[in-house]
Length: 346
Image (cartoon, rainbow, N blue to C red):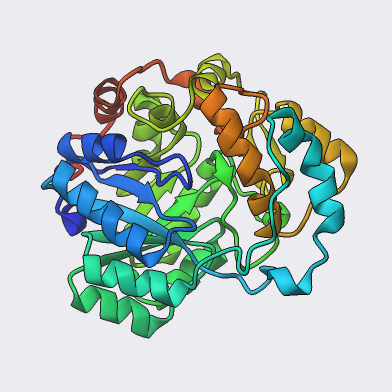
């Protein structure tokens, strides 16, 4: 897409916690727009990560931040005892002590934005809200393109009014967190085929289709619906360049159309993934802390389980079309997707 300075209108979804320098750089080097999720990153880690990305590719890439929705809980205002007790068996199974409550679950967004502005990637994408117009203008003045993310037409119109450079319209088929902000996620589950053309008709900014796109057919359909580009997650997540575990890759490869569910078990926010023991047992307990406390609570054992290759105690995020992708490398997935891009697109 010309607005991003890339050759092909194919974007890598920014995986929070599962991004890798290698995969992001690979997609950018292939002529698309690599994406890297900065969820939970400190200012120094943001600087370091963007520097590593610039070392790995001379081409444009995007980084992603989560906007606060206003309902995030903070440690002093929540009794975490019952929630820690609920996940303690997972920690014990892995030989770990239950986590100690931190002073804060997440870094200050203002500090993260300042770090991104200083590090100056080509693109900043945002989820879970509408960035203030002055923030958008300040980033744009620095040469940073700003992308918002919508799950409904109403959200897309709000982002358009804020002056973002492009809008990712994320259908309910997409893997990972449902990034709704204007209404509860459960009431914002619009499928890609219904969402994309209605967003295209309602906004001036270019629309990037996301959700259920894993091969050339999905790409062609997205452009037929009026999209100017596609953002793909699960198909790239199963490649060897991603930070997914082997167990996660195997689950993605074996996925069918009905393999995924929507759950709050792993983070406290609605997300789409493949059920495993951790998800099932947490849901059965009914003891799920609000976001971001639950994400912090499960994060410790998820990291340890991932290091041990245990696919039953990690988040197996996946979209409904994950099983359509057969590519094992970023280049193979990219070539398949590119073959669905119309000759007139750019």
